[in-house]
Image 1: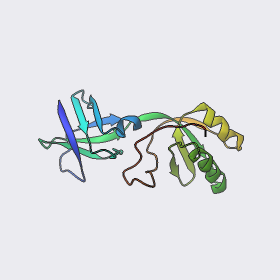
Image 2 (image 1 turned 90 degrees about the vertical axis):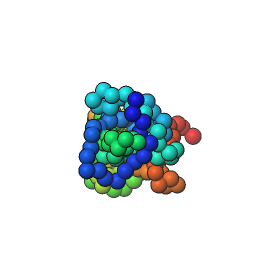
Image 3 (image 1 turned 90 degrees about the horizontal axis):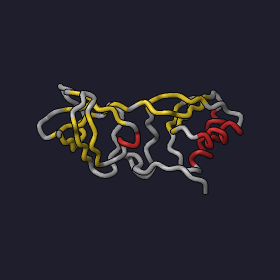
Image 4 (image 1 turned 180 degrees about the vertical axis):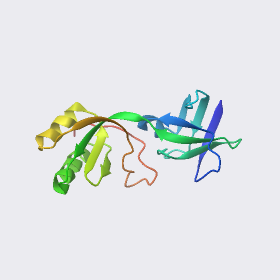
Length: 151
């Protein structure tokens, strides 16, 4: 089993890829398979979040490109920044991880949250997309916990 322990900035040679969902990309220790089926271990420093396009390397110089897996995502599209800000406020108040773009907001699909967003007059579209949420404000590497709950 190959063991990947470090991210690198660039490489002349990419030897393969590994497709991971967000839950897998936030783990510091993970046993999985590369996209070619080879068993691998990923052992990153705690707090490191792998993002789509990151390159990881093993002790022998074998380089894998990280690919963000498709996930079931709830998407909100609007040209009204106030409505999107309102949605972000209420989702953030429930500790929901968000991928925020200029005219859209995305989160891991949750039908209860979808109904809340719809109550603001916004449409929610269920899509299959890679998910890369905002990095945490207190941790430049991203957050390490994924949860949502009512307060």
